[in-house]
Image (cartoon, rainbow, N blue to C red; front, side):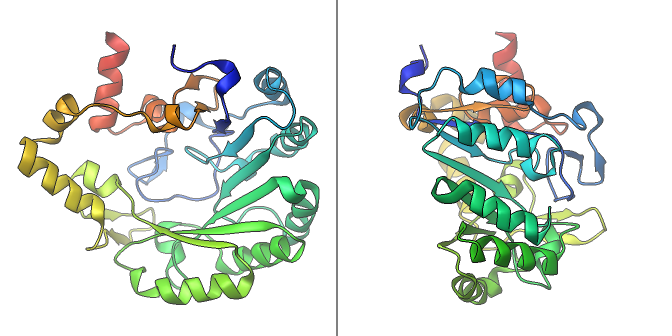
Length: 287
């Protein structure tokens, strides 16, 4: 058995396939240019959440809207399912979002409704002149209005910043802005997508060029793996697996109410582009 029901501490939820942006390398798009047609406009419903949360007692479970495929706030069913989730008294509800959706008044009410149980991670990859290079379609002014309204109403917020060649020089300035705005945490991270696809550049929806940051540790790790094992495939076959989400007692539920060990395992089913992750998934599916 992967994990006992009574031991689960967190449910990661991919609430919807909807999003208002066209981020480079996103699974929602075909090479960042057009929507992948198989999974358009799919949302979890109130009935799904009744089924999903029914087994768990109050003050037991964390619910994390991870945004693996879509942005939960783009969904027309989010509000009623969020209110239902709160009625089940979870330990915490965390929402990851690009921050451009909804209005400042909605965000203020969201903070007030969620109270101490709500946490929001704003995925903002740069400043006014750079965020939309990756977050294609993002509106900087709207993000700042929404952030200000949410934090001003008592909301607990974190800023996640993906480093690219075009924005890494702004990290210190962005962290200073995060402090000024009242974010509780500023977190920088790298994307592994360039490394797994064997690329250092990507063209976005509007024709802009994304470049991987030279200091991306994922590129360095991939080079070391190939030097030691000959190929990434051999590394995967020879390396013992230590499942992070099993140790942390988490599970993942996608927008079709499919249950997975984690988002990394569940995501390849919907990938259009074949990479190592998808190839391994298809192999497991056939065995």
